[in-house]
Amino acid sequence: MDFYHLPLSAPCQSVRLVAKALGLHLNLKEVNLLAGEHLKPEFLKINPQHCIPTLVDNDFVLWESRAILTYLCEKYGKNDGLYPRDPKKRAVVNQRLYFDMGTLYGRFSAAYYPMMMDGKELNPELVAKLDEALEFLEGFLDKTPYVAGDKLTVADLAVLPSLTTIEVLASYDLSKFPNIQRWYGEVKQSVAGYQEICAEGAAEFKQAFMPGS
Image 1 (spheres, rainbow, N blue to C red):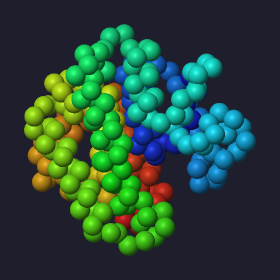
Image 2: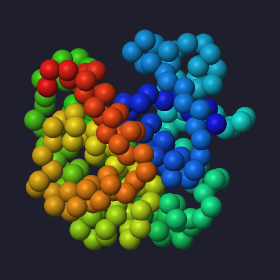
Image 3: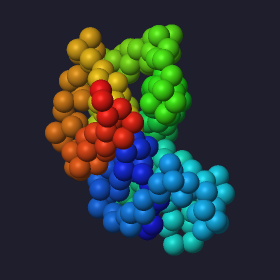
């Protein structure tokens, strides 16, 4: 499988974590967005929406990280451990994936990307919205040990890179979120590939866009 990605991207990192958990080999193809490689004709033929991550599995092409995560689990998972088949459990996992995309990582990018990419001042109102998103996550983890239930799922492997990026790039103090701190400490140690994929990727992101911070 060819995987078009950028190492510093949290959504791309989540796919690599799931592939590692499933024992899948990804043929990594780095796409330099700043150099416009995603707009080259050869990439547009693969993905006319020209976004990453993009997965090419033989003649099947898929983009949007959370869709890729669930596809890999459904096609290649030896069991339903990471993506439960039970409709209610799966619905909760799906909800957390959408939460990560639209609320947690969405609010982080809304608050911090303008500062990192365009040098704008940090907007306190948008930072407060990110705080609220973290409070929601804190509440989820007050009810269950993992993001979407009693076991590790793709929801954890999506939120983990997002939270790492938030902590590293924003120098975010998580001490006011004890449930998040507990979960974060545990999954950082237990998830295969975390250091090389997430921690190093977030550090590369910070060095690229916030070198003096």
